[in-house]
Amino acid sequence: MNYFVRRTWDLPQSQHTSEQEYAARKQLRREFLATMGLGAGCSVLSALTPGCQQATLEQLEAAGAVEIDASMYPAQRDGRFEYGRDETERDEAARFTNFYEFTASKSVYLHVDKFQPVPWTLEVTGLCAKPRTFDLDDLVKLAPLEERAYRHRCVETWAMCVPWTGYPLHKLLATVEPTAAAKYVRFETFNRPQEAQQMSSSRYPWPYSEGLTIHEAMNELTLLTTGIFGSPLLKQHGAPVRVVIPWKYGFKGIKSIVKIELTDQQPTTFWNSLNPHEYGFEANVDPGVPHPRWSQEWEWMLGSRDRHRSVKYNGYGDWVAKLYE
Ligand SMILES: Nc1nc2c(c(=O)[nH]1)N[C@H]1C(S)=C(S)[C@@H](COP(=O)(O)O)O[C@H]1N2
Ligand SMILES: [Mo]
Image (cartoon, rainbow, N blue to C red; front, side, top):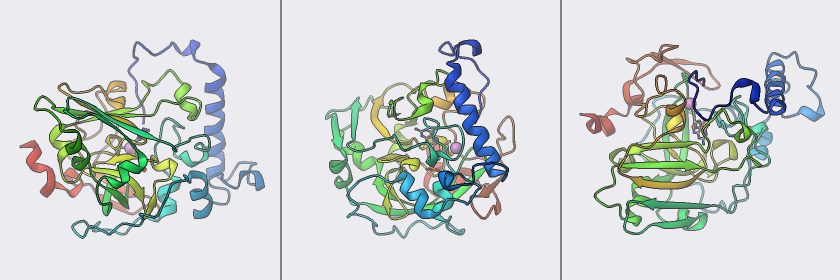
């Protein structure tokens, strides 16, 4: 994803920490060359470099593994949801994703080794009667875990079909008793430049944040997510806890959340503040509204590269269209 709008916190190009920028560019170039099969690096040392020997599922999972008690996975599949398409291979999903805290490339798994998602706490606060901080154990035991087969559509036109594990966010929100004044929910990702290399770049408004209206947050589809493919989340998928909002573009599905805040004002959000013209706050999947730089009529599946026509609300209109009437 890209942005063109300079913000007050943007340093002029000349003042960027040039070493970091240089290292980041070098890494991107390495990945690019490797993908093209031109890199010199197809050796033992770079077993995890995409494009050389494509990393195996074992390597991908080892790179993103988190030491979490996995005894509650897999959870029972919720029969109300079906992809209507083939399921994406788990290695395809694990090797290609967005997580800007680590890299602007898709090979996030190559950059997550320093990230420590355990122990973890999630603070739920703001306009509510019973604000509370949960540790991971409290969080996964708060409601029965279920598995949901959801379609995912990134604003950049790639798509996937993967099974997430979690429970509806409304179950968590109910425990803190939102007040009548709560109109929005704001989410925030961790802020740890030592563990996530791109967080040292002042070009971005860290920490990553996102937001929903309270009605979107309370919708049955909005999933507080702790697992994927029947196991705890890999680091690259947003370990240990994220949200999944299948009728919206993927950037709304904020990863590795440390804070959820009930507010009476629409929150400022990461991509929207970088470029409001390209990344709206609402961001519902809609093939009728082109991105300023590309059409949104089609999407392509990770792995197979199959193309499908994109569908309004990503096909979840029965669940959510009423929110926008
Ligand atoms: N904290 C954080 N959350 C994030 C992102 C990010 O860069 N940082 N990228 C978003 C985007 S653009 C997409 S498409 C999804 C991709 O994650 P997934 O493939 O694990 O679903 O994560 C979203 N959540
Ligand atoms: Mo995305």
